[in-house]
Image (cartoon, rainbow, N blue to C red; front, top):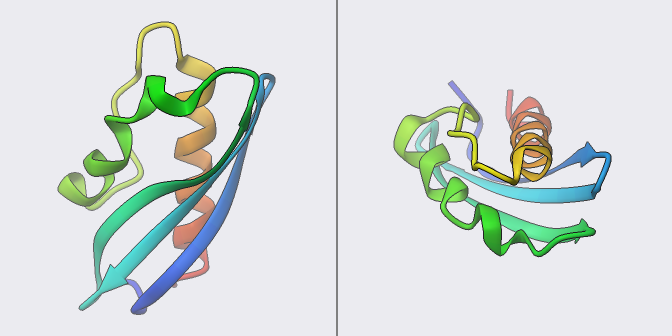
Length: 86
């Protein structure tokens, strides 16, 4: 589905930007991490989201109460990264 490699993508929210790094191996998402957190708030509040990307093989992660903007920025960062892996 995806080409192997490590891909970076950016997602934005009104509170700032998040960069995600997505590693694809064997055409599957091996891992996703928060590469850069340039938001007003700590990205610790969405620490549980990156593992969900590999578990679900999708950028569709759960919302985090009180951190919707950061969760959205992370989602869009993963979508951006995966768009480069097509």
